[in-house]
Length: 147
Figure 1 (cartoon, rainbow, N blue to C red):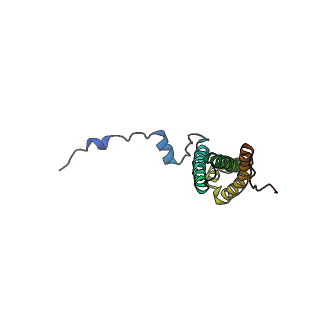
Figure 2: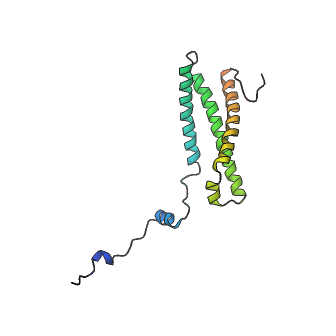
Figure 3: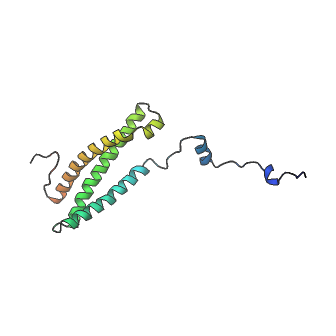
């Protein structure tokens, strides 16, 4: 028995949407915004600051929540800014040095992240503590202060 071809078999394949076609070919996808990732990191840092301030406030009944939050906010924001600044600087240097986009995306890796966190945290703690001390009038121990 010889059946005629099914009508669907004669249909041509429809074109894929541009993003799907580019992803299939392996073309790099354009990020929505260059600031999207750092802002997500900043929002996470601020949530972490509120959590740290709450824990410090609960552990020390004599301190006020506002003071604990101010110190956590100043130190956390300074650390975030220094870590992001160092990370973005490393990206710029790699782009300036002619590293491929794939290496820029994956080449940072753990060693450069460790450098970002160590130096960003040390600088951020010192600057954030100094700012919070200036705002509150307290004197806190600092990495750069010999008291």
